[in-house]
View 1: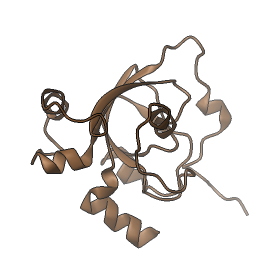
View 2 (view 1 turned 180 degrees about the horizontal axis):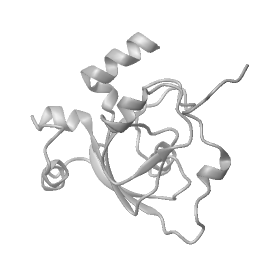
View 3 (view 1 turned 45 degrees about the horizontal axis):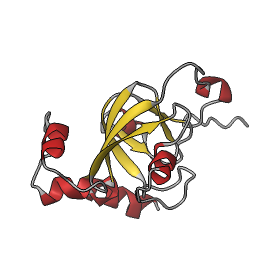
Length: 153
């Protein structure tokens, strides 16, 4: 019997060119969006955050190596992003990719539609592909993310 695991990539697919510089990752905490009555779909969301003089836990920029998971880079920078399993089997570390490209080397929780249409990523296994990206972290606080975590977890 063949078992297909479309959410798990082979090592050949995850090879990163050694000459690429780290990616610049701009992050925004979902709680800051709620607190400021901003809309997640605002085209200028990150510009609003930059102008709002938010605390480092809510908004900032970090450099992330191309083969490094976003969560690990955030922790290395002293940030406390939520997580639980570190193995792509829950939604605790979920983020919403707003711009740029980032790939998950494994995914055992999110459905294809959530990745492709909702731009959800599990930060524990998600590494940057593009030079720059913007991501809303702590998205487990979104009603949709809490619902799927409760129903699938």
